[in-house]
Image 1 (tube, one colour):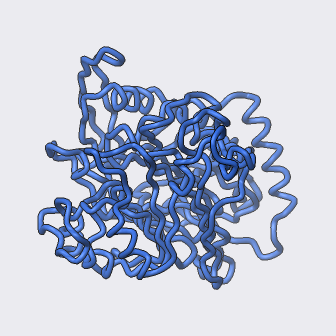
Image 2 (tube, rainbow, N blue to C red; image 1 turned 30 degrees about the vertical axis):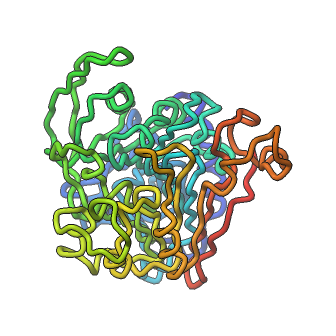
Image 3 (cartoon, one colour; image 1 turned 45 degrees about the horizontal axis):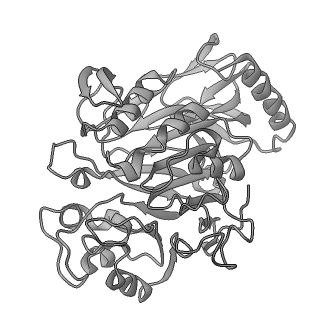
Amino acid sequence: MTLRNWSAALLLGTAALAATPAMADDVAPSARVSSAVLVREGPSTNTAILARLRPGDSATLVGEVSGWYIVELPGGTRGYVSKAWTIVRAADGDAASAAGRHTIHVIDVGTGLAVFVEGPGFALLYDAGSQDDLHGGEENRVVAYIRAARPDLTRLDHLILSHPHKDHLQLMPAVFETFQIAHVWESGRVNKTDGYCHFLKAAMAEPGARYHDAIAANTTRSVTFTGSGCNGTVTVNQADMMTEAPVALGSGASMHFLYRDAHPYSDPNENSVVVRLDLGGKRVLLTGDAEGGGRELPAMPPSPRSIEGQLIACCAAELKADVLVVGHHGSLTSSRAAFLDAVGASIYAISSGPYPYHRVRLPDAEVVAELATRGQLLRTDREDGFRLDDDARSCEMRQRKVGPDADETPGGCDNILIVIERNQPIDAAYSALVD
């Protein structure tokens, strides 16, 4: 963390202290902690260690800054603890009651997927890729959207790659360049492409980031790339292995990896990391390109060896969710009726665009029709066929295209915003955000 960012964090911390409630909540080590959480002098791993919170210990919450809780220890000493390794317990003893507003942003990246999720004490990104718009820097559609939604944000607590395909990872280098990343999660399935090479190099070069895969824990492995645009050997430093154990996010929120498999299948879609987010009493299921088999009508049962088939067989109850970000961009390879029955969602979001997959433009009409019978359906491809110079209905004409304007590429127009607040109906609509 730079001196400028640290100073800004301290100013934010001062503001947070002023807003401390009369009945303060407690901060305690999460279930992932086996030894202790370090209490530091400042919001940086480079600052001095003041104390240790061991399992069963707690400290009083007095404020927060990006990535850190400000706590007061017995005796009055104040310090900072990482949000990634702690949970907030409400003053009345009910951790769930401390939950606040959670937002899920399905970002219109054209043909691809990027889901930005934020809530009290955390921010995460699931995938960041596109087949159509590969701008970098501030014109990167994912960066531009997050900047517009959270101009104050400097850190992503969790970055998750569902699987190593271009339309899920190609925009990630700019994300690493723009934000501090605390944790990187992926299956570990290697794809010898330039895009995955750039992703893995960025993950290993990120200062202080902890990398997790489904291969091993606390060891190293090497991956060699020979591409024309990215090559060399990358030493992968693995932190704690991705398991079924829940990962604490912020207050009243947790992350569950329901499917993780690093086996080198012929198609990386079969390695899609399936994540369920529990946010303030509601559930959101992120499936990447998880499939149910070959291209078949939704009524067909999923293949037992497919991700959908395996999840139904092993843990159907864990699939229950209120919101489903639909698998494989609404393809007939996914969203089998049996899987949708197990999920039981009432809100569905499809992220897709005009780029054809094996000559098929997604989503498939049969999947759209099936989802429409089950609940509210939102799509990021509503205006992908419109251009600034030929249709006055274009979102560019109405100045609500997030990211590069008038570039004649899809994306930026139909961002989806889903808001979860405790004891309130879920609000799902197209975002009115502009940059």
